[in-house]
Length: 488
Figure 1 (spheres, helix red, strand yellow):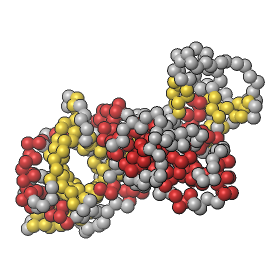
Figure 2 (cartoon, one colour):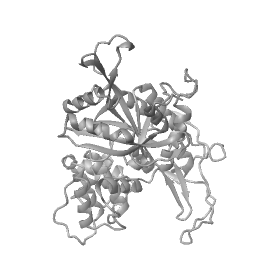
Figure 3 (cartoon, rainbow, N blue to C red):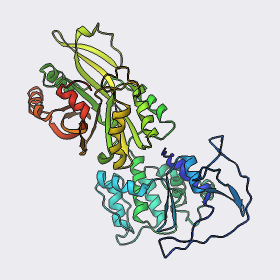
Figure 4 (cartoon, helix red, strand yellow):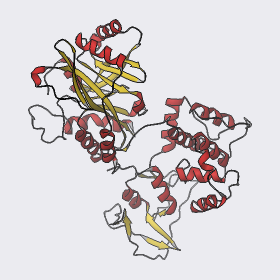
């Protein structure tokens, strides 16, 4: 099972531990690097605890891993440590590197390119390109810097602290607190002009503890720093955590308990009208403030209303070795209510039925959009077969035995980027018809042949708001729901 540890906590632990392997073979692919095997005398019998509980790390053969002390330093096998923390590990023979965790620089570069139009920052970064990047993420450029000069790391860190709107915090660091913080992080050689900013960046996680501060800013480090600053000022992702986090379930419940019905007068007027005219069977209302701002090529949006189902779906992905960022957005689902279903219940903050025309009733209910940003395209592609097997009722399985709680015959999930069809499963391209007003969005998925009718109906009700039609790739079972096929 994969697991991603909180970035700040993980890097702090790595700074406190020296990670080693017992024996590494001399033969490697890169002729510029040589490894040497040698015999040493060590103190063994070291025990390990994890989160307050005893932990017995195993090696690749399933045997207890050796922990030992050599010359006053405690050594833990890298793989045993990574598995204890639930972090991926890889051996890169070409550079003789033990790679632990995700490639955050590559992830940041993709994000900065998609949302801010920033290209490759290169091996070295000039003040000109750094200032352009700061401006792109919505931060202030640094005044008075020569375009051709490279950016020294301490100055870059100060600029990032200011970009993250933490400069007042840095000014609360007196000399003794600054010195103590830098000692704790084993940082030396920082001038007094920049030391409080470096200490602040390390304490807040804006600066990874592994970054070397003696040189000039390189492109990979710049991408990570810029991404951290964008996150800090609310211009990055908005999410609760990862599928692999042990506390993600409590966070999902906490978010769900805060949701109430969304209302926007102009959009609700449109929605009521198109449902009454039978141009669509219902609509969704969402608010842009909950938009997770994920990368579309790695994202699936899952539509449901049972929060127990949401948590079990997250656990299902974790059990299948799928790691993804998790966001939960409130939605209001509106659809025609049939009085034959039973008496109308009293309204609550999450439910109401209203008569909008004579003998015409609309139900308004709170649901959620559970959005996953996967760490790879392969993990995104794996979502559909996992869902179909373990989170979807099929055939005569009325009791939903063998699938997670709250599963539907025809669930709904979608991607804004193309996804393949696979026989009766996979994805089908639909139209996503939407209208926005005051930060709210009304939208509905519809069969392409019905789109013109729906757009005309919207414009007949309100021709001042712009109707957008975008491609969306929804799962095949939901498409069968739209076409009226029997549940399967």
